[in-house]
Length: 101
Image (cartoon, rainbow, N blue to C red; front, top):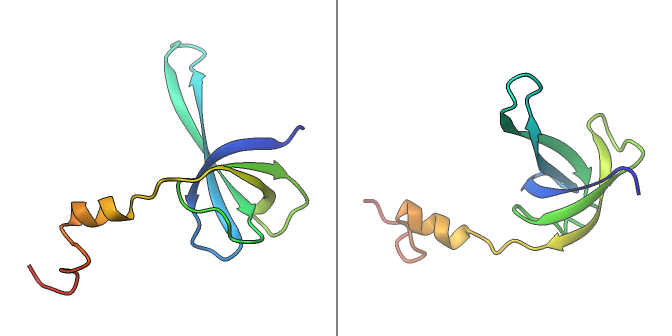
């Protein structure tokens, strides 16, 4: 169906709203150099089922708001989460979270 896009959720902080990033490779017409172009779309997520890093399918629909003209069709692949990795990088573990360095 026309109007379906596949991308990765870059933000899920708002209620019933996700931001989906879609990257595409394009070639410059004059210099023939390839570059990545990233577009962001705001989509309606009725049940708040998508999280950051999930691969999702969205489709065009009637406008929900000024910026939301897409809705979530389905979550294709759930992310494997990086919360633990983020804490390890920051040097914090659940046991040492309240302690000063």
